[in-house]
Length: 71
Image (tube, rainbow, N blue to C red; front, side, top):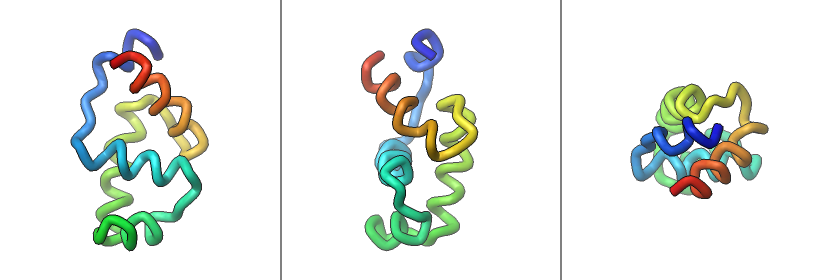
């Protein structure tokens, strides 16, 4: 992931949503915190997963850690 992480571009809101999802919050809970609909949160995660190379929320924490380490 090291080489690829440096090429990943996320919108300002996407890392925030991904971090909350990695902490175990549901889309509904994330939406309530950020004043978004659960569907909007799901859309952001749908876009983030392939960019980070993960297929489940369990992989988000490690992918985000690698992303910030490369910056």
